[in-house]
Length: 362
Image 1: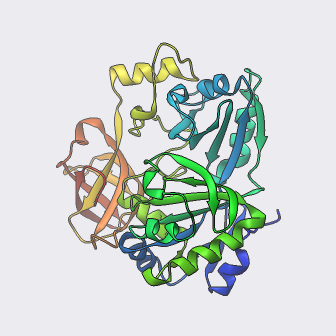
Image 2 (image 1 turned 120 degrees about the horizontal axis):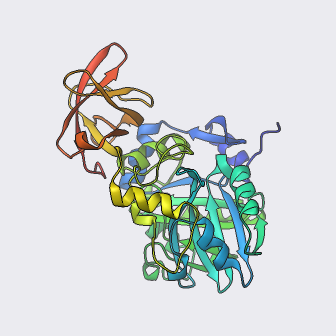
């Protein structure tokens, strides 16, 4: 299989990024070091190339009916210029993928899906398009940058006349940025540090990148790789598809009940199954935990109780660059999942103490 390259590939090489194959693309994992890049985003501003993400247009008079069927959330509540988080139920109580829905115009929506799932998600959408919506896979035509951190708005404001302070959270505008027309400027992100995600055509991508980096010089702006993207999202307790949620995990167990809308006017895949879980309860819950003993939890490690009985498994874990301690997410038996509960993580041949905590971790 041919490895794809984003429009920023030459820039990553010029910056001596550590490049690795990811979701069919050669992507930057880190530049100066994951912890340094992480703290740059938390304290100032960093830029992620996330052009490997997938973008599907859904158009026509039946667009909303299609989205309402395949999405867990209620897109009928969206006004033009608003976005929402959702997931595709898979018909078996699991999750095809999690994604964003943008209401771009009346009868025109943009779905932004995870890079590793583009082909699977596209096939799922085509298969379930009984409403007859017009679908277009624009993933290869669109570049995406995430400008994140407390200085992101000051940086971007230099390259646009749009008042970015007037764009509410999970809202967007279409406008001119860095001399490029029709850029989607979205007040969203995956870091919890604030910022914007920009969508543009590939031909305009380098122009936008260069203007942003010139504008952010006074804040020490840096390119940030996928390694720090993962540690940043984990400090916020955000799910990562393939780790914390997948085809086998229940969205109710994963804490995604808040984006699962059981309103009478909305029929969607798995509605009855998920409503039963929400009504009657589930056996396990995805919870955050913080290490008390020194150690770094990793995906797949067992979670046990004081009697060494297995009560769960770690799905994501790292050393938090902000807290300087191990943190993680994992599925834990519901009765053992209350905040403050003492649990233990099997780290290689050691049993290390941890505590269930509410997320975000910071």
